[in-house]
Image (cartoon, rainbow, N blue to C red):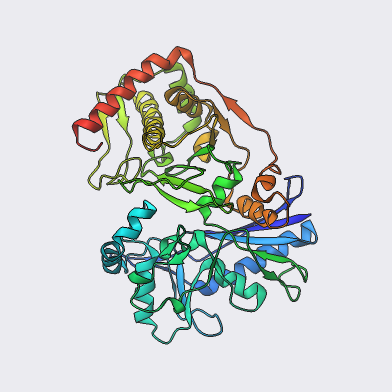
Length: 462
């Protein structure tokens, strides 16, 4: 059996053909036009570019991997477009960070306050539900609104398809009651797509399309963040993954809905009815971005040992997880002796954010069973991963997979395997690395963490 997962990201599309042994049989990628952004808060992309790119990568992977049993699509959370009665875009897609619905979102936050409290989530200025209201006014004759995977699904099946509850979450869908939050829209919800759980079969191809055979199943996917989590194998309650990319993201699985009064963490619905709580920091790998030779710095920082200075390496303004502070700014306590010590302090600072996030989970009553899965580009640094293990006091299992497209392929496989997503996770292949805390550095890093946490408290951020 071969399944295909498609990742429609901001910069491009990537497809993974995965065999029943978990091996990647083929991959292909294609670029997309860069989003148009300006200071007014506009962020848009030509939605007509999505299907040609998806079609191209599908033809390439199917030519190499052979017949495909099922396909699923994942994309950025909250990217939407208004369409006509043929499913064709009426204008550019409004991207996940477009702010033209900010006023509508503020209104929706107030009108639906009780619902959001029950869901343990907040409505941000960039939430898609406000932009849906904006699109309804901008395109009053539109047939409806589509998320990225909905548009691709319609191209594959030749008819409108349901959206999945993951992509619909920030569009105003309530995964607890399994309904649209009708009270926050300026129109009837009949303009919105039907919603199903991820891994639901949306239909069978009535004809061969883009190299996919007739009868191939089109399966409801999940957002890029959720699919990336699933690709690491964190699919059952108690399992969590720390994804260290440009920013740091902590995501996991719980049996019950986790409600965070601070709004720092929110939950998607797991395909099997569990919950996927998580949050994203504004710091992470970008803390060391721009360094001329990271490997050399890592080697020198490893020889140096724990820094004497403490850093919160936030390069932008404001923090959103594990605490919400719009006016947060990065800082360094003390004067680093050189570039190496500053580099080491930055690595430690991101690890401190990870520990603070894990502590926040435990405060909310969320059990976290080890080892903690580590994924993302930053997890390829042995030094950084060892620091994270020592700071958190947990073993870290470096995942061989963390690609959104691979996670989408798992969702496709879950639709045809008797054991669903749990069985699909057993397919994951690749060599894992287990990193244990370093006893020699534990005390020094604990002291640095307490200084870090004390500084956050003194500034009123936690």
